[in-house]
Length: 469
Image (tube, rainbow, N blue to C red; front, side, top):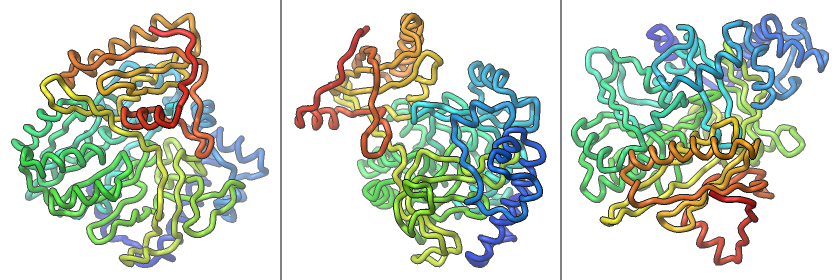
């Protein structure tokens, strides 16, 4: 880890051309690896007439795409290590929530939240994990890292599973940080009390959770003075950025990442733009014809992770749409290219009001509860302030009782941890389909009370249901 940190710090790119040269060199090395060791990629590329002898001459656009579904279907052949087979990994993910552990003492297993309606499992070995941590510390943080004076780091994330954020933070180097991990599903008052007691130097977490803390600070219930604030996991709006800056008197660092590569881009103190770690994450933006989009034109994001050899992702289609400027940053002079706009899978917070008038929030990470074999799709509609209709599309209606019983227990536990058991009610409703937005092709998984009221005012007709609990 220390060696990788120093390598990142002292081998910096000095121009965009330097970034491009490093990216191209690492792509060639990755291609040689997969064409030698990965049965999946050898077959996938052979269908396009690509073999090992072509690896030095290939450009990224010469390669076929991959998707989450394709990789999960061919999981056992993606890696060259027989330890990585989907049956054993699936059993491990199902029975283990300890984000500190290494699978077989070799691999970090990351499970996606399933926000897109499908979940995936992604693998990092120790070398790729150390590169990822070095990228995060060196590029998404400006606080001096030294073993002689530890920084107090407080993080607000979902701690309930093998998700990207908690896995990365949970393995933070104790040599450099005193760590406080806060579960976003705890009551807001508990979170505030713990932060006041801990007094963090660095505050980091989901963008919405940091935004709520900023309001608590402005309302004089939270009293902390962090020297750095980081936001990730959710889109950081202009309004939220301004409120966070006003509350903590430091500009928030915005980080863009995913389970497939946890730190792909970040802003800085001097610049709000998301600067892509392009020497390690080769991002393309493609138009509707899957050709390179024009500069700053919105298109579909495609990722090639250049540091992960344990489970290679090459020309992997993301769920995000974005635009980028493939050159150095025009605003701050950073040598890294810039994401100029991103349309990720933004879901809203669910806000509830207790009988005593206090407010509580449910973060979108609860959607991981729907990662069950019997659930094909889902949607949560807040029809009243303290009432949810939970729509489910099942793979097998005969298993409805078992599926609902499992979900019901999970939601009871979730609401009990937030002290909402006496105030919030819900109903499970089975539907035939949950349609995606005709424009974006994405499915809205959470419809807040405010959005539901707007839909009603526009004569919104809810889809028909065939059975409900």
